[in-house]
Image (cartoon, rainbow, N blue to C red; front, side):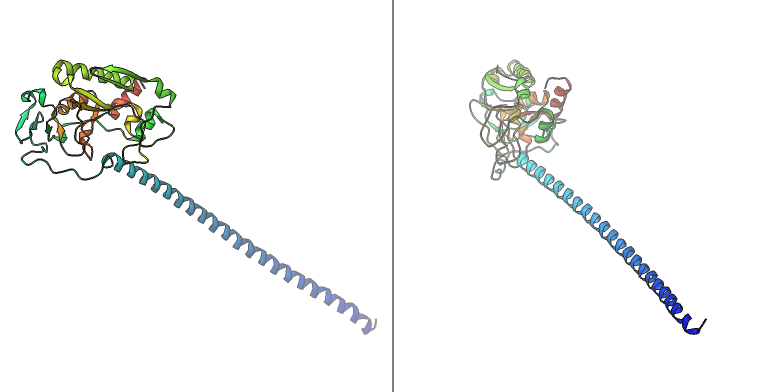
Length: 302
Protein backbone atom coordinates (compact mmCIF):
# COMPACT_ATOMS: atom_id res chain seq x y z
CA UNK A 1 0.00 0.00 0.00
CA UNK A 2 1.28 3.35 -0.93
CA UNK A 3 1.97 6.00 1.64
CA UNK A 4 -0.61 8.30 0.11
CA UNK A 5 -3.36 5.81 0.64
CA UNK A 6 -2.68 5.74 4.42
CA UNK A 7 -2.72 9.48 5.02
CA UNK A 8 -6.46 9.87 4.50
CA UNK A 9 -7.55 7.22 7.05
CA UNK A 10 -4.96 8.48 9.56
CA UNK A 11 -6.22 12.05 9.29
CA UNK A 12 -9.80 10.84 9.71
CA UNK A 13 -8.82 8.76 12.76
CA UNK A 14 -6.99 11.70 14.31
CA UNK A 15 -10.03 13.90 13.64
CA UNK A 16 -12.33 11.38 15.28
CA UNK A 17 -10.05 11.09 18.31
CA UNK A 18 -9.78 14.87 18.57
CA UNK A 19 -13.56 15.20 18.33
CA UNK A 20 -14.03 12.59 21.02
CA UNK A 21 -11.59 14.44 23.27
CA UNK A 22 -13.34 17.76 22.64
CA UNK A 23 -16.74 16.21 23.39
CA UNK A 24 -15.38 14.65 26.57
CA UNK A 25 -13.91 17.98 27.73
CA UNK A 26 -17.09 19.88 26.89
CA UNK A 27 -19.19 17.27 28.68
CA UNK A 28 -16.97 17.51 31.72
CA UNK A 29 -17.20 21.29 31.72
CA UNK A 30 -20.97 21.14 31.37
CA UNK A 31 -21.26 18.64 34.21
CA UNK A 32 -19.04 20.83 36.38
CA UNK A 33 -21.12 23.90 35.53
CA UNK A 34 -24.36 22.08 36.30
CA UNK A 35 -22.96 20.90 39.65
CA UNK A 36 -21.87 24.39 40.59
CA UNK A 37 -25.26 25.77 39.60
CA UNK A 38 -27.01 23.09 41.63
CA UNK A 39 -24.76 23.91 44.58
CA UNK A 40 -25.46 27.62 44.29
CA UNK A 41 -29.19 26.96 43.95
CA UNK A 42 -29.16 24.72 47.02
CA UNK A 43 -27.37 27.36 49.04
CA UNK A 44 -29.82 30.03 47.87
CA UNK A 45 -32.78 27.88 48.87
CA UNK A 46 -31.26 27.22 52.29
CA UNK A 47 -30.66 30.95 52.81
CA UNK A 48 -34.22 31.73 51.71
CA UNK A 49 -35.59 29.16 54.18
CA UNK A 50 -33.47 30.67 56.96
CA UNK A 51 -34.81 34.11 56.09
CA UNK A 52 -38.38 32.81 56.11
CA UNK A 53 -37.82 31.28 59.55
CA UNK A 54 -36.31 34.54 60.82
CA UNK A 55 -39.28 36.52 59.48
CA UNK A 56 -41.66 34.08 61.18
CA UNK A 57 -39.76 34.47 64.47
CA UNK A 58 -39.84 38.25 64.22
CA UNK A 59 -43.55 38.12 63.39
CA UNK A 60 -44.15 35.96 66.47
CA UNK A 61 -42.15 38.35 68.63
CA UNK A 62 -44.19 41.24 67.23
CA UNK A 63 -47.46 39.49 68.06
CA UNK A 64 -46.25 38.78 71.59
CA UNK A 65 -45.17 42.41 71.98
CA UNK A 66 -48.59 43.59 70.82
CA UNK A 67 -50.23 41.20 73.29
CA UNK A 68 -47.98 42.46 76.09
CA UNK A 69 -48.88 46.03 75.15
CA UNK A 70 -52.59 45.16 75.25
CA UNK A 71 -52.15 43.55 78.65
CA UNK A 72 -50.24 46.59 79.87
CA UNK A 73 -53.03 48.86 78.71
CA UNK A 74 -55.47 46.60 80.49
CA UNK A 75 -53.45 46.78 83.72
CA UNK A 76 -53.26 50.56 83.44
CA UNK A 77 -57.00 50.76 82.86
CA UNK A 78 -57.68 48.53 85.84
CA UNK A 79 -55.33 50.20 88.28
CA UNK A 80 -55.08 53.80 87.17
CA UNK A 81 -57.51 54.27 84.32
CA UNK A 82 -60.66 54.50 86.40
CA UNK A 83 -60.46 58.25 86.46
CA UNK A 84 -58.18 61.21 85.94
CA UNK A 85 -56.26 63.52 88.18
CA UNK A 86 -54.22 62.89 91.27
CA UNK A 87 -55.57 61.87 94.62
CA UNK A 88 -55.35 64.70 97.16
CA UNK A 89 -53.13 64.26 100.20
CA UNK A 90 -54.64 62.75 103.32
CA UNK A 91 -56.30 65.08 105.82
CA UNK A 92 -53.69 66.56 108.20
CA UNK A 93 -53.53 64.50 111.36
CA UNK A 94 -54.96 61.39 109.73
CA UNK A 95 -52.81 58.28 109.99
CA UNK A 96 -52.54 55.77 107.16
CA UNK A 97 -51.56 52.43 108.61
CA UNK A 98 -48.65 50.45 107.19
CA UNK A 99 -49.26 47.15 108.91
CA UNK A 100 -47.81 48.43 112.18
CA UNK A 101 -51.06 48.91 114.06
CA UNK A 102 -53.48 46.23 115.23
CA UNK A 103 -55.54 45.08 112.24
CA UNK A 104 -58.86 45.87 113.95
CA UNK A 105 -58.25 49.62 114.07
CA UNK A 106 -58.68 52.56 111.72
CA UNK A 107 -58.47 56.31 112.03
CA UNK A 108 -61.21 58.81 112.63
CA UNK A 109 -61.44 62.12 110.78
CA UNK A 110 -59.14 63.81 113.31
CA UNK A 111 -56.61 61.01 113.33
CA UNK A 112 -57.78 59.32 116.53
CA UNK A 113 -57.46 55.54 116.58
CA UNK A 114 -60.81 53.72 116.75
CA UNK A 115 -61.42 50.05 117.34
CA UNK A 116 -64.14 48.18 115.49
CA UNK A 117 -66.01 47.75 118.78
CA UNK A 118 -65.74 51.47 119.49
CA UNK A 119 -67.12 52.92 116.27
CA UNK A 120 -69.53 55.87 116.48
CA UNK A 121 -73.25 55.50 115.84
CA UNK A 122 -74.15 54.72 112.26
CA UNK A 123 -75.60 58.20 111.73
CA UNK A 124 -71.97 58.96 110.78
CA UNK A 125 -71.69 56.20 108.17
CA UNK A 126 -70.69 58.70 105.48
CA UNK A 127 -67.80 60.19 107.47
CA UNK A 128 -64.54 59.71 105.59
CA UNK A 129 -61.84 57.54 107.14
CA UNK A 130 -58.30 56.80 105.98
CA UNK A 131 -58.13 53.05 105.59
CA UNK A 132 -55.44 50.53 106.44
CA UNK A 133 -55.04 49.15 102.92
CA UNK A 134 -53.11 46.03 103.91
CA UNK A 135 -55.85 44.87 106.17
CA UNK A 136 -58.31 44.14 103.39
CA UNK A 137 -58.49 41.71 100.43
CA UNK A 138 -56.00 39.29 101.99
CA UNK A 139 -55.98 36.07 99.98
CA UNK A 140 -58.46 37.50 97.45
CA UNK A 141 -57.39 38.18 93.87
CA UNK A 142 -59.05 40.77 91.69
CA UNK A 143 -60.19 38.88 88.55
CA UNK A 144 -58.74 40.42 85.38
CA UNK A 145 -60.83 40.58 82.20
CA UNK A 146 -58.93 37.65 80.66
CA UNK A 147 -59.90 35.53 83.69
CA UNK A 148 -63.53 36.60 83.35
CA UNK A 149 -63.49 35.72 79.65
CA UNK A 150 -61.97 32.34 80.45
CA UNK A 151 -64.58 31.50 83.08
CA UNK A 152 -67.72 33.17 81.69
CA UNK A 153 -67.11 34.04 78.04
CA UNK A 154 -68.03 37.25 76.25
CA UNK A 155 -70.95 39.00 77.98
CA UNK A 156 -71.82 41.07 74.90
CA UNK A 157 -71.13 41.41 71.19
CA UNK A 158 -69.81 44.99 71.33
CA UNK A 159 -68.71 47.38 74.06
CA UNK A 160 -68.46 51.09 74.73
CA UNK A 161 -68.81 53.36 77.76
CA UNK A 162 -72.61 52.96 77.91
CA UNK A 163 -74.41 50.27 79.89
CA UNK A 164 -75.84 47.44 77.78
CA UNK A 165 -77.53 44.14 78.57
CA UNK A 166 -75.98 40.67 78.41
CA UNK A 167 -76.32 38.97 75.03
CA UNK A 168 -74.51 35.72 75.88
CA UNK A 169 -77.30 33.07 76.25
CA UNK A 170 -75.30 30.87 78.64
CA UNK A 171 -74.55 33.86 80.87
CA UNK A 172 -78.17 35.03 80.73
CA UNK A 173 -79.25 31.63 82.01
CA UNK A 174 -77.34 32.11 85.28
CA UNK A 175 -78.39 35.74 85.78
CA UNK A 176 -81.31 36.95 87.86
CA UNK A 177 -82.89 40.11 89.32
CA UNK A 178 -83.76 40.12 93.02
CA UNK A 179 -84.61 42.35 95.93
CA UNK A 180 -81.67 41.87 98.28
CA UNK A 181 -82.31 43.67 101.53
CA UNK A 182 -82.93 47.34 100.75
CA UNK A 183 -81.67 47.13 97.14
CA UNK A 184 -82.88 45.53 93.91
CA UNK A 185 -80.10 44.29 91.64
CA UNK A 186 -79.38 42.11 88.62
CA UNK A 187 -76.33 39.85 88.96
CA UNK A 188 -75.13 36.27 88.54
CA UNK A 189 -77.28 33.96 90.65
CA UNK A 190 -74.43 32.76 92.91
CA UNK A 191 -73.37 36.40 93.37
CA UNK A 192 -76.92 37.25 94.44
CA UNK A 193 -76.90 34.30 96.87
CA UNK A 194 -73.63 35.58 98.33
CA UNK A 195 -74.95 39.16 98.50
CA UNK A 196 -78.03 37.93 100.36
CA UNK A 197 -75.82 36.31 103.01
CA UNK A 198 -73.82 39.53 103.36
CA UNK A 199 -76.93 41.65 103.76
CA UNK A 200 -78.43 39.20 106.27
CA UNK A 201 -75.29 39.48 108.39
CA UNK A 202 -75.29 43.25 108.07
CA UNK A 203 -78.93 43.49 109.13
CA UNK A 204 -78.23 41.35 112.19
CA UNK A 205 -75.05 43.20 113.20
CA UNK A 206 -75.66 46.78 112.01
CA UNK A 207 -79.40 47.33 111.36
CA UNK A 208 -79.01 51.11 111.10
CA UNK A 209 -76.31 50.78 108.44
CA UNK A 210 -78.37 48.11 106.65
CA UNK A 211 -81.27 50.53 106.30
CA UNK A 212 -79.01 53.16 104.68
CA UNK A 213 -77.59 50.92 101.94
CA UNK A 214 -78.27 51.88 98.33
CA UNK A 215 -76.73 50.98 94.97
CA UNK A 216 -75.20 52.91 92.08
CA UNK A 217 -75.44 49.88 89.79
CA UNK A 218 -74.48 46.23 89.34
CA UNK A 219 -74.86 44.52 85.94
CA UNK A 220 -73.65 46.87 83.21
CA UNK A 221 -72.01 45.55 80.03
CA UNK A 222 -69.38 48.16 79.11
CA UNK A 223 -65.68 48.98 79.04
CA UNK A 224 -63.88 50.08 82.18
CA UNK A 225 -64.16 53.83 82.46
CA UNK A 226 -61.31 55.40 80.51
CA UNK A 227 -60.48 52.23 78.54
CA UNK A 228 -61.30 51.14 75.00
CA UNK A 229 -60.14 47.53 75.41
CA UNK A 230 -60.66 46.32 79.00
CA UNK A 231 -64.17 45.06 79.83
CA UNK A 232 -65.57 46.07 83.22
CA UNK A 233 -66.37 43.26 85.66
CA UNK A 234 -69.83 44.83 85.98
CA UNK A 235 -70.39 43.33 82.52
CA UNK A 236 -70.66 39.81 83.93
CA UNK A 237 -72.90 40.72 86.85
CA UNK A 238 -70.19 40.01 89.43
CA UNK A 239 -69.63 43.57 90.68
CA UNK A 240 -71.73 46.14 92.53
CA UNK A 241 -71.33 49.78 93.55
CA UNK A 242 -72.93 50.75 96.87
CA UNK A 243 -74.05 54.06 98.31
CA UNK A 244 -74.71 55.12 101.90
CA UNK A 245 -77.65 57.42 102.60
CA UNK A 246 -77.78 58.03 98.85
CA UNK A 247 -74.21 59.42 98.81
CA UNK A 248 -71.39 58.13 96.61
CA UNK A 249 -68.00 57.69 98.23
CA UNK A 250 -65.44 60.16 96.84
CA UNK A 251 -63.53 58.48 94.03
CA UNK A 252 -59.74 58.39 94.18
CA UNK A 253 -59.47 60.67 97.23
CA UNK A 254 -57.70 58.07 99.40
CA UNK A 255 -60.53 58.09 101.95
CA UNK A 256 -63.48 55.80 102.58
CA UNK A 257 -66.91 56.28 104.09
CA UNK A 258 -67.00 54.72 107.55
CA UNK A 259 -69.91 52.42 106.71
CA UNK A 260 -68.01 50.92 103.77
CA UNK A 261 -65.27 49.78 106.14
CA UNK A 262 -67.81 47.66 108.00
CA UNK A 263 -69.22 46.34 104.73
CA UNK A 264 -65.76 45.48 103.39
CA UNK A 265 -65.19 42.96 106.19
CA UNK A 266 -68.40 41.13 105.30
CA UNK A 267 -67.67 41.17 101.56
CA UNK A 268 -64.10 39.95 102.11
CA UNK A 269 -65.41 37.11 104.27
CA UNK A 270 -67.55 36.02 101.29
CA UNK A 271 -64.59 36.15 98.89
CA UNK A 272 -65.34 39.53 97.29
CA UNK A 273 -62.57 41.99 96.36
CA UNK A 274 -62.92 45.56 97.64
CA UNK A 275 -62.08 48.42 95.25
CA UNK A 276 -60.58 50.58 98.00
CA UNK A 277 -57.20 48.97 97.29
CA UNK A 278 -57.20 49.71 93.54
CA UNK A 279 -54.39 51.90 92.21
CA UNK A 280 -56.97 54.67 92.41
CA UNK A 281 -59.22 54.00 95.39
CA UNK A 282 -62.80 53.09 94.46
CA UNK A 283 -64.32 52.23 97.84
CA UNK A 284 -67.93 51.93 96.71
CA UNK A 285 -66.97 49.06 94.37
CA UNK A 286 -67.12 45.37 95.37
CA UNK A 287 -66.54 42.45 92.98
CA UNK A 288 -66.40 38.68 93.32
CA UNK A 289 -62.78 37.51 93.70
CA UNK A 290 -61.08 35.13 91.27
CA UNK A 291 -60.80 32.33 93.83
CA UNK A 292 -64.55 32.48 94.53
CA UNK A 293 -65.40 32.48 90.82
CA UNK A 294 -63.22 29.43 90.22
CA UNK A 295 -64.89 27.66 93.16
CA UNK A 296 -68.32 28.42 91.69
CA UNK A 297 -67.14 27.10 88.34
CA UNK A 298 -65.90 23.87 89.97
CA UNK A 299 -69.29 23.51 91.69
CA UNK A 300 -71.14 23.97 88.41
CA UNK A 301 -72.80 27.21 89.56
CA UNK A 302 -71.51 29.21 86.59
